[in-house]
Image 1: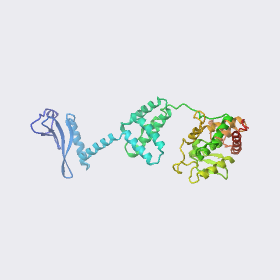
Image 2 (image 1 turned 180 degrees about the horizontal axis):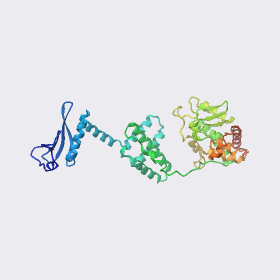
Image 3 (image 1 turned 180 degrees about the vertical axis):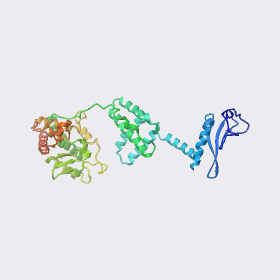
Image 4 (image 1 turned 135 degrees about the vertical axis):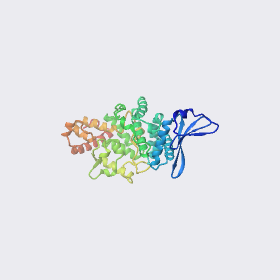
Length: 401
């Protein structure tokens, strides 16, 4: 006769364990201690097995019967209910071990195997450890966009906006790695687009006084460090590219015979190819550089391996070695120097100067009528700038002319 809830509730303990049967193999085991345990007896592949369904009254009669039905459905489908339950328990245990800290460790380990620079790994670990203060113990499957934003806002409140933005990117990278491992199905940082404050705009420090710039040029010429770093600073002054464009430049981009450097679209800020005319002084510097760094594809290979370029801090470090602080001069500042002095000369079309800097016209209507890259004028301007710098270097020319 099937059990009733009243009968189960009133079942009193005895000296020995005893069973009260329901139906379909379901029964409750009453222990001498008074505890009452649901059990389901079933057969799988000819063998009798027992499945625990929980403790009464945590699991009532109705829930025990529902679990019995679920087990019967698994058996009908050719699955062992006990094996399915054990697998679910193991998955739950594994999920509890899949914390953000654990995934971060795996992510950094992968970056190291991928050959990331030690400085990059150290910086990434520092930022991710900061994120771990809030997210570290959370299972990755439980992390929501709001949790990430709360951690980011703490960093943002300290005024270190760039670190907050870098943290967001790295958290997203860690969680995407979790997706690839099957730990989670998606990563939520995409929904935080625009949620962080933009860092205050800062102009790159630059020397725009001709006399002072001449002093910088002479200091660079006397640079006592690695010769390729000295050449790099000289090329930044002479060709005014973005520092990253020069740092990652490859010999295959240069046509010394035609005197042009073509930066591919994927490496320019505006994602369009950019040509730079090469004056005689640049050709001489590039030939000197090639004699120094001939084995590799990069103009400026790392001292550790010629298969990789120098770090993004190399040119900045060279300026600091010369005694110039970040408030006085930066690698990017050479562009501002060129723009200022070339415009002050009154010799060149402002649009030609903007094209030389790889700037794109922001006015859509005006841009539609200004498709020229002013190449011929830029070639003449490059030769003029080279001669002008030589005059500043010698202290014989101050005013642009």
